[in-house]
Image (cartoon, rainbow, N blue to C red):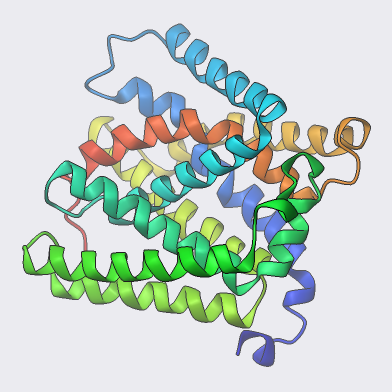
Length: 291
C-alpha cells in the first residue's frame, strides 16, 4: 500500500534511513551520561566511573565481534529484542520474571517480522560480513519458526496479563494493532524502510520523550531548549565516528554492507546504553501517568 501510494519511497529508503538515524536514532542515546548522573540511586557514582565502564563495555563488545562474530551477532539480536520490548512495555505491571519474558518475546517477534518478511534482503546484508557465514546456519525456515513461536507466546502472554490485571484491555488492543501495523509495513516495503520507521520514528522518538520527561521531573526549570542543547555534543561525536568508520571500513572489512556496518557499531553501544535505559525504565514506569 505504501509503495502504491508513493512508488518512489522505497528507492529513497537509504536517504530516509540516514536522515532519521542522524536526527533521532543517534540522539536518543546521547544523554546516557546525564541520565546516569541524575539517577537518584547512582548520584554517589563519579562520572569518571561512568565513562570508564561505558567505554570499557564498548571495547569489550568490539573485541568479541573480532573474536566471536557469530555469538556476538546472536547476543546482539537478543539484547536488542529485550531493549525494544522493555522500551515498549515498561509500563506493564506484574512479577519481574514475567516482564522479562514479555520484553524479550515482544522484541523477538518484532525482529522476526522484519527479517521473515524481507528475508533475502536481510540475508544479503548479513552475508556481506563474511565472518558471520550466515548461509551455513541462517535459513528462512528458522525465522519462520521463530516468528510463529514468538507470536503465539506473545499473544498468549498479552491475554494472560490482561486477565491478571497487569495491562488494560485498551492498552493490549493498542499493542496488538501496532504489531499488526508493523507486519503490514514489513510486507509492503523493505527492511531498511521498516527498520527506519520503527527504530527512528517510534523507538528512538518515544525514548527521547521519556528521557526528557524523566529529566524534567528531577531538574528544576528544565526546558526543551536545554534538552536539545545537551543532545548536541555526543550526537555530533557519534555521527562523526560513524562517518569516519564508514570511510575507513574498506581498508579493514571491504565489501561489507553499510547497514551491516551500522549494526556492528550500534551493537557496541547497545550494552552500555541498555544498562542505562534499563534503570530509567524501571524508575520511570511508576511516574508515567500520560495516556
